Image (cartoon, rainbow, N blue to C red):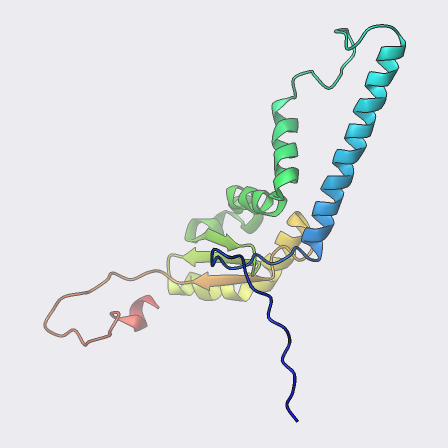
Length: 186
């Protein structure tokens, strides 16, 4: 007897890889966005029906309606919500407020470089190995402080990197595959 293999679903005919279906939080965001749009459409339709009963179609007046210009802050917030960019925008704000969060002394020697949203890892580069060791000891406290600021689970880990040493590509004592003096810069 042979075991049956699960059926393989073919990708699109042009050979591109399939994009995974949204799940979990992403699925909830999509559903919430769709519900908001439907509610907004129902509200607009009711408003138009109400104005039509009063005689005349859409009229200009002192009260706000859907045709009024939107404030810049509201437009940006709407764009962030529609595109699902809340987390990257929040982490970008943290990178701008880094000295407030970690303190002036640490901020002088350690700089956030990037945030991996899929892995929820913040990469921080330090200017010396001593500061990298110090920040590794402070990492659990910083993760807790960042999650208070951003929301639970936004940052799972802080990856601390030491200083990058000079790249030594040439010279008589260079061994093949060597990256340089690792004990000094690593």
